[in-house]
Length: 66
Image (cartoon, rainbow, N blue to C red; front, top):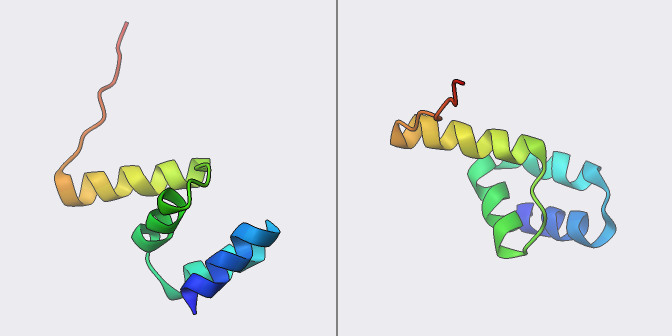
């Protein structure tokens, strides 16, 4: 079902399809779909990537102090 909702989102551009899919799956699966289908990332997608990296890989962003 999630895959079908994301397919509808991709073909129509209606964000409501993505929002419904997000209720039934993880951010990781949404990101996998976006990457596999070469869909441009949004700012909230970058936030999800950062959260995954911080949680699972102890990632700490480099802060450029000048």
